[in-house]
Length: 201
Ligand SMILES: Cc1cc2nc3c(=O)[nH]c(=O)nc-3n(C[C@H](O)[C@H](O)[C@H](O)COP(=O)(O)O)c2cc1C
Image 1: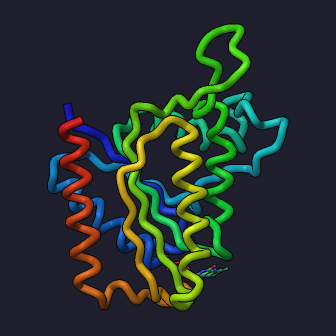
Image 2: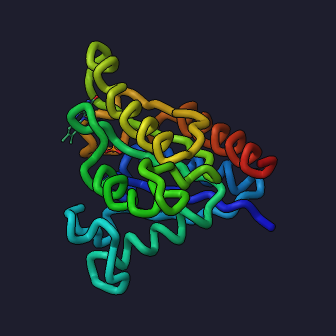
Image 3: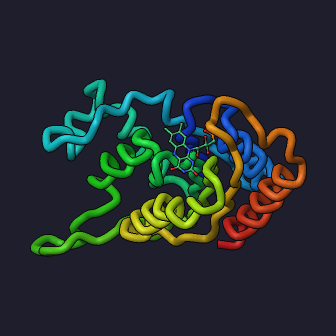
């Protein structure tokens, strides 16, 4: 059976720099034999986390439907690639909200009577694509965004397998990566490499 890679874009536009790099990555993974499911977070209707919706009940309520769909996709995938621009040294709110909303299935009590929760995403290999626009002296602070994402997925039990960073991506109002053929090739190659990791997992 084919391995499945879930590709999540958290950029506002489908031709955003991070989204274009993600697409090249996905094409590389497909070349390696993996089936790719693509999701644009801005297309979903994920209400903000609160203590009323923390268990996504009832499942067919409009603010819960999409997080339930994400649950099925994430639990059924072998790999996950997340692409995000760095905004104010952090990940975009739409992605942070997904991480908060998904904790009902990503962090669970394994046995009755347990006092501590455990990550349930042990089946998932993860890769990240992050774009930044600030000058070099901000890059060290930009790392907070990557660490936040990587640490959360680790907390959820997933395995972190790599990061592709692309600097000098401006303020996001125009696509600059399309004119960087070496970077696009690198994203494709990383996709092939990650696809092979999934195929051998
Ligand atoms: C609201 C906002 C905040 C930003 N904050 C940062 C930042 O903290 N560090 C940085 O390097 N770039 C920052 N940028 C630049 C974005 O990282 C850059 O526009 C983005 O990576 C381009 O990729 P995209 O086309 O996928 O959005 C910011 C841009 C916006 C719109």
